[in-house]
Amino acid sequence: MSTKSSYLALRLEGPLQSWGFDSQYNRRNTGLMPTKSGIAGICCAALGYTRGSQEEQRFLTAFATLRMTAIAIPLSGAKGELPARRLHDYHTVQNTKTADGKIKDTHITHRQYLTDAAFGVMLEGDASLFSEIASALEHPKWGIWLGRKSCIPSAPILAGLRDDRDEALRLLIGERPIESFSRQEEAETFADGRDSMPDQPVSFAAERRRFSPRRVITRQASESKPSTTD
Image (cartoon, rainbow, N blue to C red):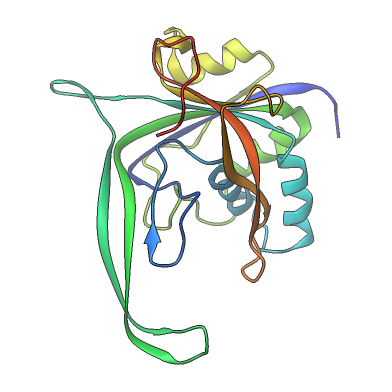
């Protein structure tokens, strides 16, 4: 692959979003920012890669080298900016299989979603890989969603591909300074980070889903110092 770096800008908007990173089984929580595993999943779906395939493995190995910045972009309403809120769904499913293969009459889960949320995501890394992703997002082979299948995007996800960081940011936040937005940045080194997120995908295979940690810095709007995640 080419060693030239570029910047891929993604826009995540929809009635519902859900970015899980620390929950499974009966309780499915959502974080306040998009996860790197969620973005990788969007890309794999657009590219048409089967879970656990060699194509997926090649892609995830390359994706791990990319640096990601997630930016919370408040939506505008009649009374100003709308804050993102968590929605809690009490979910029931009948006739599900248990681990030993038996049929369970009713399975209950608790699932969280974000409402009134919009994000910009900027990926920094290999230009040739981004060209492949951008082409797939324009003409996705499979359906893409914002964390879960019920979270359908309400706008095209691809905002643009640029060679300059500032130009890529302008695609997402216009002329406003990045400091006026809450955001989560991937740290260059472990010591630079303030939190560890277990959302670096290693494999999406159903029988061996694996993730590794990555170091991030979460900054609140108009803050210059890092803060911890919510």
